[in-house]
Image 1 (cartoon, protein in one colour):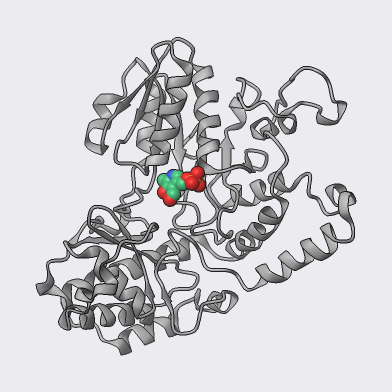
Image 2: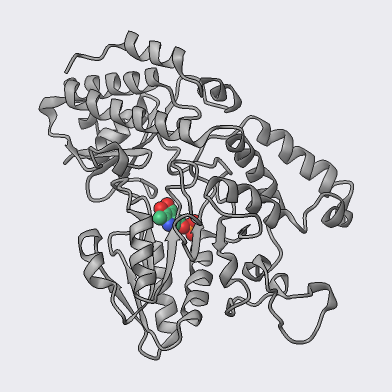
Length: 413
Ligand SMILES: Cc1ncc(COP(=O)(O)O)c(C=O)c1O
């Protein structure tokens, strides 16, 4: 393979049809941000929107804003926008609560659709909150419910006639490996079970087509690739055919069929509002909309194409230029099977990531030894990739990672 040069990368940036989006984000001076898979960069317009909500909608219009500024419908308005990014229809998605809470709601509702079945299939290697939430639910339900953990190569055998729900994350948080949503959902449904997909590392990173795959329920966050802001509300998808068909157990008044009738007893809405529970964080929702709106102006196919090119370039450069330093590729080499991130394992992964951060190259570390780098095509360029690897080359050559300050574990890695 020919050696790739910085000039090659500059030339790719010149030809990049998405390059103009970079100007819409507040990228700190001198920083190469490869952590959009954890917390996306602030869109410049977010500040003005936050100010407008605080000063005008809250500060001046106060309670009138529930109607006048569209606060009441905001979870649905944003949901309809996200629907366009994940292959759902209008009225199938709401933005609300956290990912974990939405998972609890989705699985509880799904279980109610298949009475008599008690097994939930999940990957043990998934981001742990999914497992933790379902473990809590199983404990709460009692009555013989259980999780059947299975990794990718064990899934086919694990999905049998006892299974109620198959709950998987499409893009694995550590390796970035993509599961075959279409085939697994088909097998799930052929076994008479319900599919629940976690799209935390998919939404805004690759083309997702929930309805083409006939997915039943899905959840995901807005603070990673969708640039919604720290802790911005998550989304939940319920296919139209399931809406109103089973009870969502967090039966707050926002999910009631007629919330302003203030009836004594709960009566569920028969549409996507059924997935809501209570009063929403309007400030966070309003700011999240800014990030989502940027995406709606971009072509997802172009985003995916660039994401595959950026991650492929990073792999090639690390392997060409840091060959002797024992980096072990964890992410799939096949671009089709890879999300928008690349992870390399290294014995000194934590300290190396800290040394990179010390030089303004922001990635993160996932125990026990994965160095994880996310590539957000809307604001990361090819030259950024080259420069990031150049820093890595220098850190390894000078053994900079050995410095004491890079070897203290912080609470968030
Ligand atoms: C696959 C997956 N699910 C869920 C979460 C987080 O859930 P929550 O937003 O409830 O903290 C993450 C966080 O990175 C994740 O990677």
